[in-house]
Length: 81
Image (cartoon, rainbow, N blue to C red; front, side, top):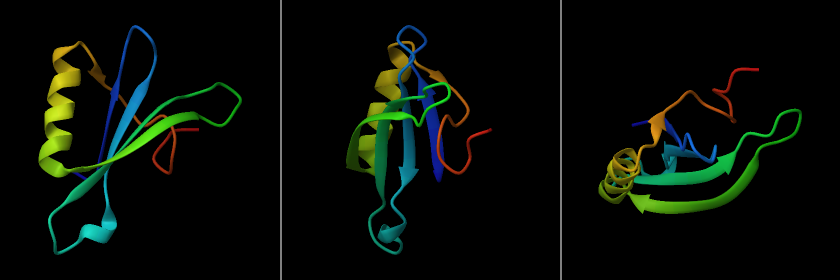
């Protein structure tokens, strides 16, 4: 997983899962950023977690079970203008 996104369809919060590039060759860790895209402003970034890949997968599966949906990037280098 290089980067993956989920969105809460009820509240609009988004979660970005992206690999910590510094963990190359070791156990893979993932950054998990929670935020909300803000029209005409920079995104509101609420929190960041640093998790082992297995723990990030458990979080992903839990959010999907709660009704979160896969979505396209909302901020960062892969976001559409």
